Length: 232
Image (cartoon, rainbow, N blue to C red; front, side):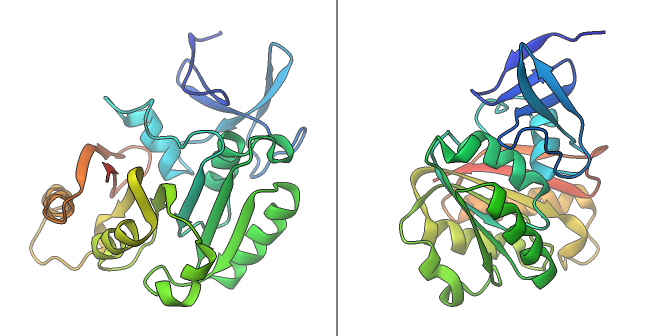
């Protein structure tokens, strides 16, 4: 049964409870996701159980239309992993053959992940894979030659908020969007439950001068995770 369709952007559509992105690499499924045509245009299903950003788009109450970068934006993704979320971001920011002129700098510490990102970059122009530790800007920061429009961090290390705050202050342009995907279990708070961890992190972000537009609990899709959408 067909759901009610609505557009989040030029390349991202919601059909019922499913999220779809306009496929920049026709007939290619990146991680086994479904392909489907809407009015003759091919889309890929964005699985929210395999993507923190996809989960946030499903769970956001007030900022669903604001979480995505704009077409043609320059983006920085810290902890890009194997490229699941990244491929959907590329559909939005770059489009087929990077017709939108976007740029996504994808940083990850794992050589295995980097191999996957390099392979992805060959079929998705506009993607720039970088091997690096999100904490150590001095080692890879030269790859970010200008301030970025949109920054997403998804690293499972203690001190996730500190890493994010430093990255936002160095790389995100004024008025830019920042997204922090936080895993509560990675933080070293003692005698503190998950909700308290999430609230303490929010206070930490606000104390650093960042405006938290929405704190999105991803429970049920990405348990033990919360995504903060901030503006600078």
